[in-house]
Structures are given as structure tokens and as C-alpha cells.
Image (cartoon, rainbow, N blue to C red; front, side):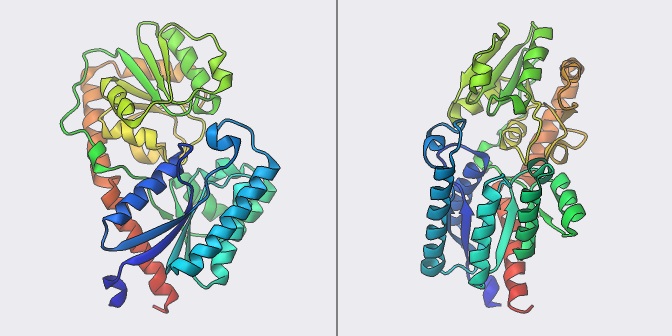
Length: 363
């Protein structure tokens, strides 16, 4: 069929860095992969934040900035739909309170042009909607417009089924093959360093991490990522080191030096930070939120209750045996190589695109 011979022309509605974000990194890698692919061509409508938040993501948003941002995005989308003429549109939605309304307006514009649209929820949907009637209303409107729904994790899939009676496809985040560790990780006889990577904010479980560090004074805790004002003013234990925002090479270096990756977040979609830790062979302690349970299953780490300092301390102690950490390390690298490399995920995604286009053309 011609459909299988010609490259797909996809238009992404998604944000690019700056500022750094999970969706932004996903979009950047997607576009880089498309540049070398014979099966996919891609353009993007950049939905990144503007104004003060483009410089400092922790800055408060203003209504004027959000209105200006929406107008800019809709104008860019209209231009790209006419000039690029995609045969499918892929809209990445974080389901945020303000953004989900803008996502609906974008999806509506695409639908009126008669172009198939895939809605990809880059979040843990229930956590984002959180009983908000306005968000739930626009979520249902988005679901009704979409030709296909993509989610990052099993809880989101279950929530969509429960609230909208709609099926969805699990499409994971991905990692470049160059990020994979090339040889088995050297496992230290004892746990000396526990690492966290991400935004150092309360919703990432940082308060519990700080408390756990106080109980484990003989272990160093390294936190890599931008530090929120609420955390920066705290008095922290001497065994905690805040690295602040660091580049990818430093992240990889601290991953390779650490003994355990700790990720006690309250909510997640599909955490790239966790994916990178698995790819570098780190055993993991994480909360069972978002895709964390899907990723680790019963073999890649220890799952702890959200907000439980006791669980974190016990988990660190439970990982003391070298053979247990070694088994988790090997399993995590193998899981990432089999399921989460960019080639595997993107080829699956192209298969979804082809099915959607084929269905719109009448089967």
C-alpha cells in the first residue's frame, strides 16, 4: 500500500525547551529521531511557556501571559496546518488546569480541518484532574475529538475507561540508546550514596527524603535538579548535597556514581529521570505512582508508600545486600533495552499513526 511506503507527515502540538521539562525533552528527541527516519517527517507547534515562567519555571503565571500564549499557539497552528499539510496531528497534553482548555481549542481547529488527531496525555490524568469539574469537562471534550488516545501509564488508562468509557493505548516515554550503560554496573559492597534527580520541590517527596536522610546519617544523599524557594530556605542535614540545575553529562556522572536511586514523588506521568536511572543500572526506591509500577514491576526496585519516611528508611536498609542490588541493576538495564529505547517506542507510535490514518481513509 502507498500508506506504508510514504513517510508520515506528523504535526506535533507540544512544548520544546526552554524551560527544561519532561514533555520538552520528549519533543526534542522525537524531532531528532524524525530527521533520520524514512518513515516519519515532523514539524512542531511549540506550546512552551512564555514570559517569566520561560526563565524560571517556578514563577507564577499571569492571566495576560496565558492569553497571549494561547493566541500565539493558535496562530502558529493555523499557519502550520495550511503550510505543512500534515496527514496526522499529535497533541501532547499535560492536562493542566489552564492548558487543557487550550488543548481543546487546538484539537477543535485540527478536527475542523478534517485531519486525524492523536491525543497523548503526558501526565497521570486522575492526579491532574483531581475532581476539578472544569478540567473533567474539557478532558471529555478532548476524548470525543480524538481519533486515538495515548496514555503513559496504567492508572491513566483505567481512569479514562472509568470516566469516559474510552479505550486508550499505552505509549511509554523513551530514551536514546546512547544513554544505556555499556557494561554491567559495578555494585558497591555497601550503600554509600543515594541519588534523586528532578525538580527539588515538595511534591517530589523531598520533605520525606530530607527526613529519611536524618535517619541514615552514614549515607550521602545527592539531589540533582533546580531547587524551589520552599526547599532552599530549609536547614538540611549535612549528608544532603544540593547540586542545583546540572546538564546531562553531570546527571549521567552522578547516576554512575550512585548506589541507589530514590524517587519518592507524589505524582508522575512517566518519569524520564527514573528511566535514565534504570538505563544506567541503578536499583530504585520509588512510590507506586504514574508509570513507576509499570516500569519497575516486581524486580527493578522497592515501592514505598507516598509520604512515608519509615518506608524509605526501611527500603534503603532492605537494599543493603549486594546480590539484591545487583539483580535489580541487571533487570533494569534489560527492561529499558527491551521496552523503552527510542527506536522501539517510535516504531510502535508510527504503527499507531498508520492505523489511525488507515481507519480515517475507510479501512
